Image 1 (cartoon, protein in one colour):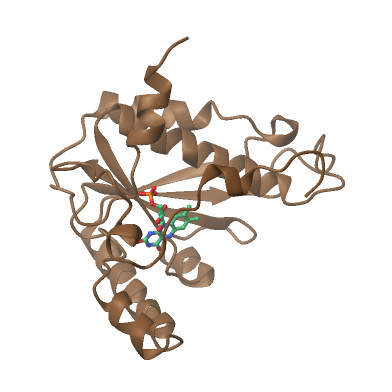
Image 2 (cartoon, protein in one colour):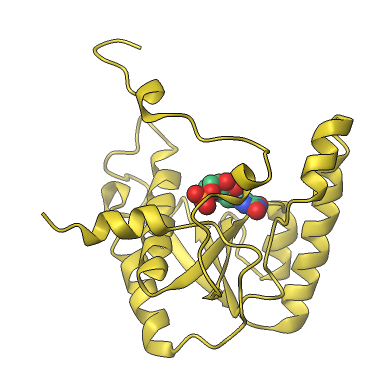
Length: 206
Ligand SMILES: Cc1cc2nc3c(=O)[nH]c(=O)nc-3n(C[C@H](O)[C@H](O)[C@H](O)COP(=O)(O)O)c2cc1C
């Protein structure tokens, strides 16, 4: 048994505050993207694309949008949750070395995608597997990844000139970090705690 995959899985963290902004060598980026591109996909549709975003003006525009959406979410919280949320950093868009926007094209491999006729979301699952491969590969390379989802898809589609019908599923901040925390940020800030595995496992019936 090879323990290293388990080490990487448990070391992986969602990173916002620890990015250093140092460069990521091209060969490292290529290995990470190759890992993402090796993911399983329904009907071998490989419905993902990766937009590498380094441009400062684009990142600033996205950052402004994220902070507007942060306010939209904060306005839905009661006073105690709002106080806790105020202490939580939700992105490292400006501090990370680069960002990778991962998109989903539902038309890729169509019209008859093998295995998707009954579950349309199987295409989305495939892209999430590519994202997880990317995240674990980056962790194995001692880099941090932070998933930012405080955005409206039409805004990001316009910002990056994504073709109509293709959905931006994730904005991922990527780069070297000072360290990876051992506890998720949301637990450290008392927002929410992980539930034990035994509560998630069912036998024979729910
Ligand atoms: C689909 C998805 C969207 C997420 N969006 C955000 C986000 O917008 N901002 C943020 O700070 N973290 C985001 N996260 C990170 C989660 O908060 C994080 O994964 C969770 O708290 C567990 O921490 P860990 O990834 O370090 O184990 C997202 C994670 C996923 C899987």
